[in-house]
Image: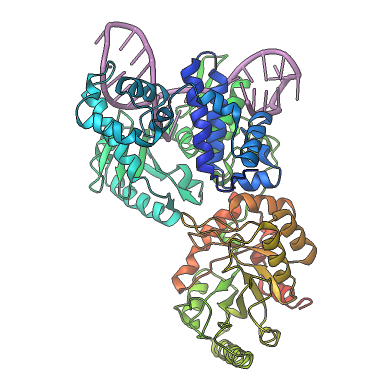
Length: 594
DNA sequence: GCCGTTTTCGGCCCGACTGTTTTCAGTCG
């Protein structure tokens, strides 16, 4: 049996978009709703923060809104056998090249088909090269329905497609947005300016950036926007909307609205797309049509304006929905029942138990850069009551047990002496350690050395490719040690770089609940691990979580807000997050039974 | 093909922009 383990969400989304494309070419009229169904399923998969393969492993494919019985069974076939005859039959009506060309921005199924036909392109592999060559030779402008402009657009689209790199991390996207907002604010006609879209929803990675402006003079704002000094090119520019490209290949969309309609613009542009579609379908059944301009009553032929977002949601009988959970995951019906969770907030975090210091214990991985004093100063700015020093364990291969014990005794002394020297002792320091989980599930630290610690955390730093079964056993046996409080960066993923490990999450969650272990939400920007979708399942199962920064520098403590965002995206409340609790409670939790 | 928010049948978001057109089709978010 052929098993395809390497299908990414992006590849599956591309496959489903191709099916939608083929159906469009067959007959857009007859297949109208099947087309949107396939496109929506593809969008849901592309934007899901769970790997589809993991959902399939757990038999939860249909948990994703937009995937029903049929598509789920086709995907099941795909994961089991690597092929889906039903899709193959639909796709076989057109040359493979059509689906390749559809990948180019600006080219949809119909344009792709016209180009393939007129230029005699059929093979997927050489399709882009052939198209580019034809465009450069000026052949495309000769095809009916095309002109010089569209030929130029195609070349730009191909270039953009080639340059396409990974998505931006939150802090990168934030920096780009901030710089643009500063520029836009220099326009005197601007009354308000906000970043919206996936950045406002605090998704783990950001594809493009959306900016909204409240102003009664849209044309001045657009003029300012398209003269942004850092832009690569203007993609398009209209009366009140425009798009530009800035390095590194990041698209920025802007939309301007008069202040009295600004609320509906915020709502529209924050998305997500799937949340908005679901909201508009709901509203339609109530007799209202929603858009960025406001709410239209279909019965009374009347328009309602909203200067803020809350009144927009309230008008529809819904509670205000925080941006982080606008993903069409059940938030609309809960808002209708006035039953949304009270999401955890930045200000509720009282400490951080995963911080690397510069105390050198000859660690297995990188040492922190900052001194205890620098770390404590950073923690005071955040009004923390405590921090946990969670340095890596000393390397096991290059030390004897007694050397390790010696190093940790000295480390304990250093921490204690520092704490007593602190004026007012405003911040309590815990003596913790991040311990490698060896490939057989044992800890990379002898029990004698573990005795010097207040607590331990464990993490996978090697042998990432073990099978799901073995990895699950490995993690559980490490967590089982009484000194261990939590699993650090549980999936081990690195955004844009490395997929997470394979784990049986139901088993891990069960173990955590029954044995009083916590899972970390690591706020390091290219980790954000646990991912939000797993946070949501964990919270539902009653697992306690702890948000930490994994700081290697005192400045990194500020990253905690990214971890809080992940927690919020996973529907966590204050009660779900261990480090919203004060020092005394944390002390008793750490001492309890350890 | 999906979904249950008056529906297990009969609905299915809304508007912007561009290019090649003389009124609209295609694509996008």
